Picture (cartoon, rainbow, N blue to C red):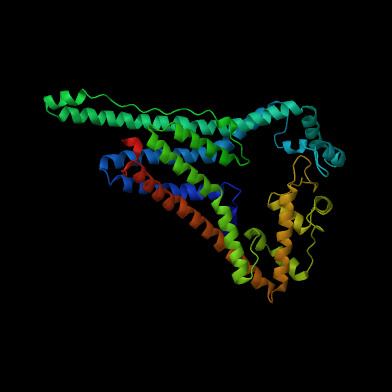
Length: 410
């Protein structure tokens, strides 16, 4: 159970590290720092800033983390109603040497009849499929972007304005009449943001990064004044870097350090490292691997030996998908570069374990160190997101405006 959790939060390509960092550590810390910094100006501003931050962070997290899968689930039903299987990979339209729609149809036509029917439908309706896929991508990214980046800030600001107006009326009622007359003669200053229409042109493989980029655009353009726009841009760009780039390099640094300091190869997932079948196979020297990491050898191996330890491990990692009858799913695209890297990491771990005097001890130690690396990565990246970035943000704010309070609350 613990290994499963560590494995999940250690996968920087999944949403689990983001959930832990965002909801468990980053958001509470940001709210605390926001209140603490704004208290330097006044308790009233601190209350307004804390309320805005609480609503902003938690509602944004819900939309950011759940918006894409929710919209895609609904859109998949629409695709099914049109007679297509949404699980068929559109990447197969690009015919490669060892995979593609036409290639897979010819190869698996007598092995996976139902799946080939799905591929035939895709093949005969390419334009429709491409439109549906583009619509799915647009809906899954633009709807959360619109809600997080444009609708939520406007509603949040409107709530603050309503509370401030009510507070102002209450304060005016308490003033002497001569002062009240002079006070109410002042004109209110309104803040408006310029809407930027570049969301549709944002290009990135990661849908979470796309929505984060769109959120940045939304938060900057809906800011109540230029200073708030600058601070929001600083915060959002920093958040994107620390969420999507930094953890990958931290993981590489920690794993490389473990190799240099302890002589341990910990590049594999902890679920694989601690697998009893792997330990047994290493001891018996019975592990079969593809001859090399080139496409021909990889496809030849995973198709001819689906029950091998390597193929099953690759399947657990989501690098290969097999049907119940053991045949590789012809509707799924295989990232051979990723699978080749996995094959090399697998081989390197086996060689390192076989060189050790005690294979069982080596594996246990490697699993423990890998777990420590994953937890350390989460803690370091979370500290950067939850403490360092907010502190830098308010330092930037002070430098820009001469005040600690959020510029939008002026």
